[in-house]
Length: 201
Image 1 (cartoon, rainbow, N blue to C red):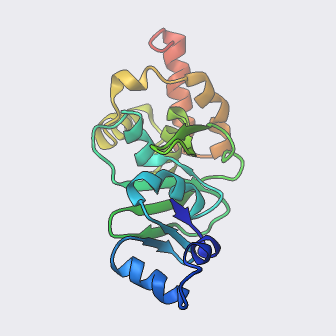
Image 2 (tube, rainbow, N blue to C red):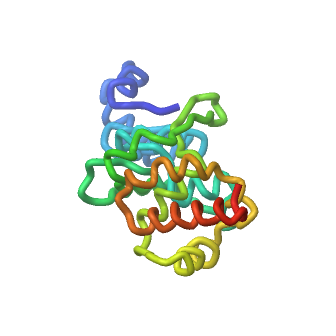
């Protein structure tokens, strides 16, 4: 369960020194302090929800989302999320889980967000496959040729090619201009040329 300062004070209201009680619970690892005013008693189950509320507004994206969907083979333990209007990346580290935040353009932020449920049945926001791919390409080094793009996709990021060609390419073409990114524009061009040549549906 996730707690803020108020809910914890209610939980431990019978104790004369509530702050001391909270410190004891944290020291005994029965309670995890994610940041000031944000705690959980089950970090592994609550992690997706915490990723959304720790730094708002945000949604899970980048490497974690690609791993979640099976687009990349490596296990990703860091909960990577997208936010906007932030000048610097932000990271929160606990003993078991790390939460990382990177900015995407304001204009594209609201698109391609879906909802899934954690083990407790609580909903959290996560990028669609297509949005997560665009977000991560936006965060990488710029490429301007299709040859460079394919190296980035299938060698550097190790995107599963079979899964890649199952993506909703029309959605990617639609949101590509909002990134104002050479890399995303190259991806859009790759898709358009593939459609024209019959290599992409």
